Structures are given as C-alpha cells and as structure tokens.
Image (cartoon, rainbow, N blue to C red; front, side):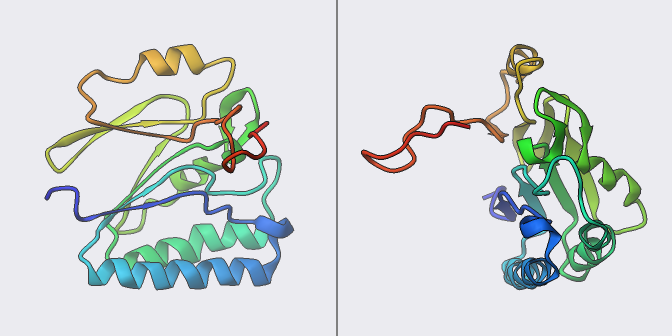
Length: 178
C-alpha cells in the first residue's frame, strides 16, 4: 500500500504551559520515542495536522530553539524525509488572518535532510504514493470561502485543521464553542 509509510501527528502544541522546560523536555522525549517506532516501521513521511505551537502571540526562546535545532536533528536521526504541516489556529498570530504564522520558522531549516512542506495561507497539494493529497490551513472568516473552493477535485484525501464549533465533545454532553 503506497500510504503505509506515513504517520499522522496532530496538535503537538510546543510551548504548552507557558513554555515550561519540563513539559518541553517531555514533548521531545515523546517525539523521539514515536520517531524510533516510526523508523522501525519504515515510515519516512509525517503529516502534522496543525497546532505545532501552543501560543499564537508569542513563543518562548527555549521552545523556539528546540524547534529550530533539536527537532530537525531528531527527524534526521530517525530517517524522516518529508515533514508536511499546515497552520492550525494556535500557529496563527491573528485569529482571522493566516499572514503571520509561527510555521514560517521552517523556512530557516534548509540545511537538513528533511524536506519541510508548510501550508499556511493556501491549500497545498502533494502526491503521496499514487494519491493526490490536499492540505487545508486554518480557515477563518477572511479565507474560508476561497480556501474551500480551491481544494482540487482530484484530491483523494484532504487533511485540515478545521474548527468544529457546535459539535458535541462527548455523547450527550457539552458542545465545542471555539
């Protein structure tokens, strides 16, 4: 199966708990453990489904340094060739604009074996195996109509970080309000 070499990881939220170093160390420990397991299964492509970062208005220096230096080294160490991500609401500086996005830090990572694909303000498409896959960044009131219309009809799979307002969070319980 051409898609058997892919892992999907969602909502990593680097910088959670105000950038607390203990939480960051645990996140990196978890990531390394997951990457070891992926390597053992021959996985070389990861789709990260948005919210790579936790706080939209700022990211502490320790978190930024971990993402810029430790993170790509882990990907290299465990043979990850492609990292595909798209903006989630926590990655965007403004709620109603995708212009300023923490994922732009990946533009600085060009000396590694991993190729980074980042989609923040337009729908991106990549062939994965013999399938065309679309990646939809965070939808907001200023881009929703345009982005939804731009999803290619030939995309067999569509990934997105979609707002689920009004969806029940548990059976018979509270509804998502944000």
